[in-house]
Amino acid sequence: MAYYLYKNRGVFVSLENLELQYIVYIFLLQIVSIFLIALTNKKVISLLDHEIPLKEAFLLQYANSFLNKVVSEGGALFRGIFLKEIYKLPYTKYISTIAGLYVVNFITSSLIGIISLVYIYLLYGRISYLVLAFFVLVIIGMSVILFVNPHFKNKKGTRIINWLNSILSGWSTIKEEKKNLGIFVILSFSGLLLISLQTILVYRGLGYRLGIFEAVYMNSLGMITTFVNITPDSIGIKEAVYVFTSDVVGLNSDIILLGSLIIRAIGLINTFLIGGIAYLKLSPRLKGVKRD
Picture 1 (cartoon, rainbow, N blue to C red):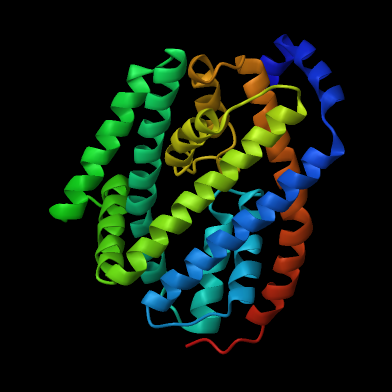
Picture 2: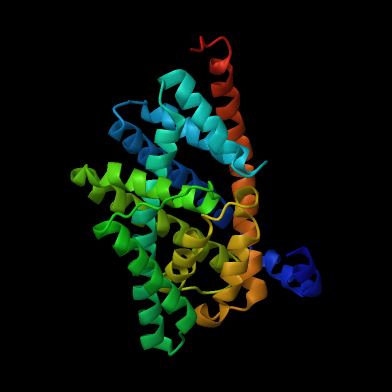
């Protein structure tokens, strides 16, 4: 990304157009996004016959986001330890159930992504058949999990198979509570919409117009691929996906990359400020906890 921006450094001229109000709007939307994730986590924990106050779930999610900015999966580790020590919630069971939400998120993002892509094609004649095929394959794969609920043998302890089995186990827990399934779908869609609004605002602040369907298309693809957490906060992965969508959304790839980095910069300030406070508030509670 650094090399790309260096070769296209003229794009930074666009930063002169970025007004403070757009930064504030994005900052506030990021807080609401964290709140939605915290609400989802609270619902998941309640499925496991444990209860956590919404305020604490909110602080825990912020601490999680803060630590993820430092090291990949660092936040998940802290969250797992905190829930195990304070709420006696088995880490593996919680992570498995959270992983089960991938099914909901994948299907929701893929369906909305296809709808957005079809709308863009009908209106502007722009389409990516590769992305369309990807969305369709995701839906087919998730549909198999929905109706067949398979389980993979893993004698060699392969990490990917362990991950798949964890998703399947968590999904089994979630689908047993059908009344909550609709809530998870709504929360997933709301989260996607909030991220898309941030995308619209950042490009509007830079002087470019991006429609809601284009923003939703970008973030539908981005939400699916950012579950590959091989870098802290999936940095670089999401940007690569966004640049890949440039032909469909109608923006230059350098502007798309700049907008994504601005959102990251605002998110960095957001999570280090609020997330840092949340971490300092929660971490002392782990000290002196009587362990079994």
